[in-house]
Length: 164
Image (cartoon, rainbow, N blue to C red; front, side, top):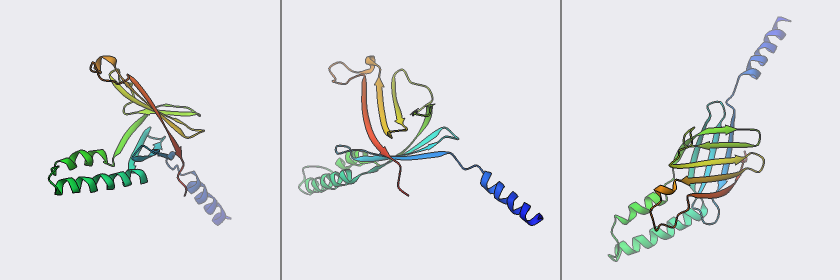
């Protein structure tokens, strides 16, 4: 009887050990975007880790551009400094965000907990459809005259849970 109780207690402790509460989604960049983005939501800490990586379209475009650039450098039409711009364009990077608001239907997050009045980007993940909405706001006074930029831009990405 003591052995059975010890086993039940052991299973109870193992079963009740708290694992981090997380959600992982992968958002596809689409036909005109070079990157896919993977978001890991940690609900215990309120942080989101985003990993941006080249998708098939981005890899193809990178290869084409670098082939052309190599050709232009060989023929003297460009310098090796030209690589810097394209290295930045195809940079795969990681970012950290914080959850601003959490509900059963939506997760809203940004670079900081507070919304910036000057420049702010806010993401909202629809938990039912797994569609990610990104809204970037720029204060009108920061936009130079003659520049065709709107103070608010919105784009959407379709996401999915990774298959295991």
